[in-house]
Image 1: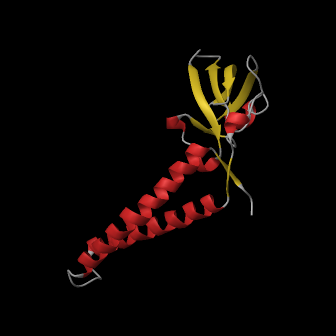
Image 2: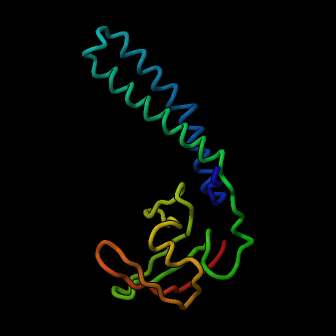
Image 3: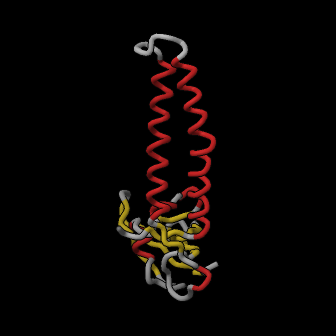
Length: 156
């Protein structure tokens, strides 16, 4: 099986989510199903069907998280230096708008653009790998080509 690269923070966040699902969400949904079942006829019981759908989602997410964590390879980014690679914290500037963006290059399992966590397999992530401060990259996006200048690279 393929290892899944994660930062320590990403591993801890996924582990915390798994613990929450198992200790809080799963028992709560079991209780909600029992309560809905007590209301009688299950064929037309919307509460029961909704709770069962939620239970299915929770159980699926638990299995997914267990699989990810079981194959996780936590990478100590504090020991890394040099060009952009997994774990790098970068500041890039959009060459058209001159807007600065801050990202950390992470694996697919912990990627979240709203939190500045850029998937290493995304078009931008792939374009940045191996580059250094001062380099420019061009990325093909659905809206056309975009150019970015790499302002800084660090490993913290």
